[in-house]
Length: 188
Image (cartoon, rainbow, N blue to C red; front, side, top):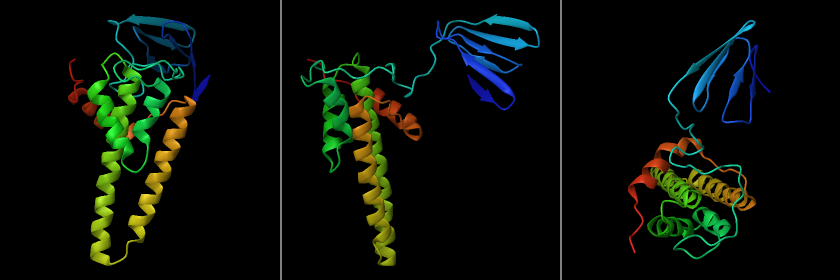
């Protein structure tokens, strides 16, 4: 049960149904329900998929990664999901290798590889800006602090993915989707 101001929302487990109380309105996978005081009106729409954590990701975020080998990569899925977040540029190499080798049907691994690469690109861009500020001001304290924060964030990301918890970085959604769409797996 969620509370949105004075509105109470309860999500049903079956077929993406969302029951809404007191006039609040949410869209479900294939229909929308509006509940007014004592009345319920159901409006049908064409079936659509509800967005998952990453716009290009279709995997179930609640499912834990298995230790089964990833297609064309040969390493367990849980390790393949952790590698893109490895610090010291190991994650950049792992992300690119995974995006180039893993087929599109391995959505969880490709999502983490694309998100890891987008995260590294963001971190490197911000480090570059802090480096410029350090050159101008003569003080590299801000650059050092951001590098330390980036390292800690990458380690925490690795830990969360290793534990199987959903790890979705919302500000990187567009970049993750773009990377996942543009980097095609190499044909064998």
